[in-house]
Image (cartoon, rainbow, N blue to C red; front, side, top):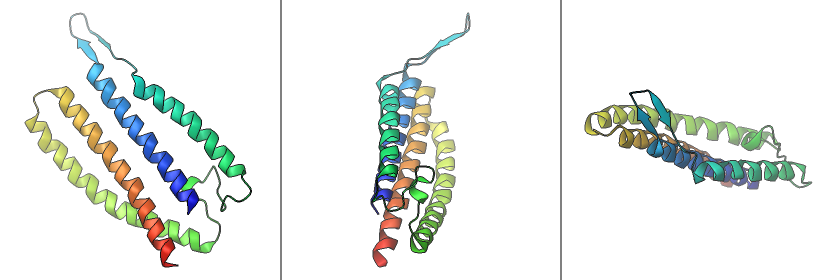
Length: 155
């Protein structure tokens, strides 16, 4: 179970930093029409993301090399299995997550269309959509984590 918590926590932090970096980039972007040019800034969240990817990559490598790592493989990540029971739990947790995620994305797609009618400022709309998508990915990682823990606890 430690490997699932480790991997999902890392994924959630990665998505959070990516989402915040994208929002920061959209908010700092400037576009001029005559003559056409655009500029944007790589803010602190992109640098934090790069730092996190390095730290998490090293942590994954070290966790994979650890002797008592519950069958963790850096190539398989959260889908690493020690036995058939864990493989079945991973499959059930993935299936439940996708069953939750696909209807959520359909609802969010219609929500984005509706929000496009409400917002007059394109930057606010773009940041809202980025936040919604990032939030839905975080929800999906949490769903996988919680489902995996619940199925593992059942025995």
